[in-house]
Image (tube, rainbow, N blue to C red; front, side, top):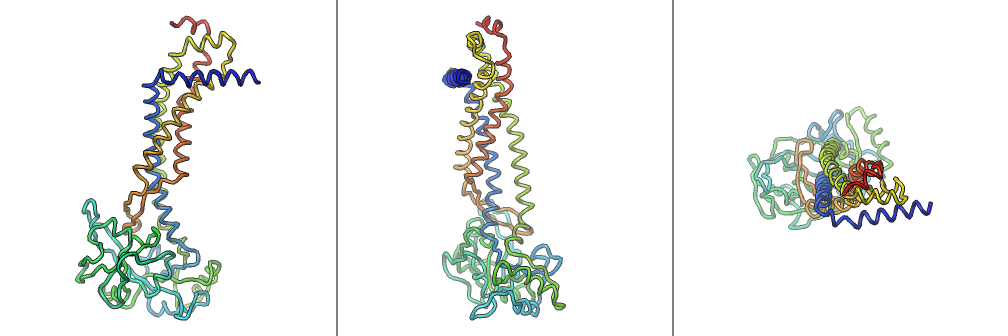
Length: 394
């Protein structure tokens, strides 16, 4: 066992030490792997950005109430009378001001993207006076909040960075109404940061919505109260409501998008990985050819075939790791923190690409796999090489 291990270490060290003699093809193989890892991590960092937004947006003790059959707020409708009935439910949290609830509606307005000027659908959300209490980390970052009864809006940080004309103090015309931006708000990167907010009663009047709403957010007495809250609404003949936790609601809205990006990233990584494997194969076959006499000599001296296989695989995987580290670093420098927007439902959602440590580890593991596959066939060829045939190579 000790003799076998000694052989493995000796041949592997010799193989790695001679990499500078094959510098050009080795660099080509490493660069190919780096390109694959960079693209793979870059694409999947979009998925991680979505997930980060989702994690900041959902709360288990916040319930969203919509009309039965609605998959999102746009297709829902709730009357003022129904809002009051929901607020009277025993599971709704209360304080000295009453039920912690916000009846809401939104319309979609056209706002140009900052970089291209292309019109995008951005939610203009009308909220109740307690809406800020129902978002986990809401705060006014610049300016002030809107005054009830006025055509004033506050803009989420993500929307202000991604779209033109949403800066503090700007005036915008949507429909027949002139609106003024009086504040910018943060919510730790949640979905709310992709929206524009105003007083719900003002929005109802501006868009002829009467006294109707599309959804209602309520804080529950606890996360465990969701089922009893749902049961109390389902047994009330005056209501026809669908109840979800805020977390579940956002999961449903983004699961298709997350799945699409994951499949796209996997497909791109697989196709580019094939190219990287062929590059590694060529490099390692060249390395084996260059070391033909050396390997044959070692075999003649009593070194086994398995140490030869391990030495070639080790070299290929080392090149894969080097490429993986470079590719991960390039992905982090090139993608992490970049803000973008994409369609989610009927409107735009802003997010930031997130190159997480877990994603970098996945990229490095993929690079190792590429190196292993790229070195497997050349290593077997080296092990099967005849000693006499190898010694004749000059």
